Image 1: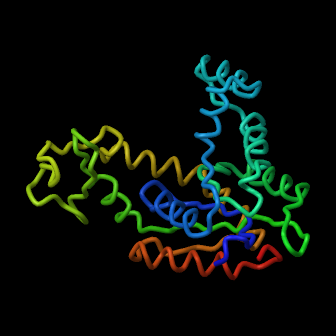
Image 2 (image 1 turned 135 degrees about the vertical axis):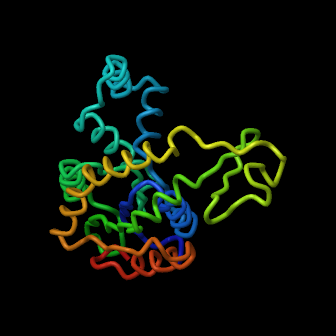
Length: 234
């Protein structure tokens, strides 16, 4: 695709271990659009000492969650940056149906500069992966103590058990990769994100994709969906 073409907003949904990060990077590189993380936005505002960042830091210092309104304000500022004009991928946002509604309202009021002069609403791609497969992907992960090389005992095992192929360092299980933690993370994700998926499904904008397929095949299907999206963004 020509890099001058407008891609529009893309929202990726999917549980931990579904491959959202991998696919987001491939989309960003292929189309030349930014991958936007709400975590990065929050940290950036705090580090720069912006008015929003100061407010957020005070809230986090009290051990409280940053409220939707503040998160949405930060996202709005980021999406108005010049590098977002042709499109972007949202990573970790929206997390709630309320945030999804705010995002639609934001796009309704913000005109994106494309050849048809229209407005773009997000295309939403949900990566579905079998639950047992997710557990294997996450609990099977082993990390090299020395340089962070990652293996999976089920899908990409080291040549020698518990030893890094590259530097011979021990491989360990990170605390957040333990099975009891993984199952809790997946349950939390399902409870939080199901209303977001239902919101977009009711709007007719949710595309479900089989994340059990080979990584490159999933990428190819995503490219096809993006390039054949409904509306006037291409």
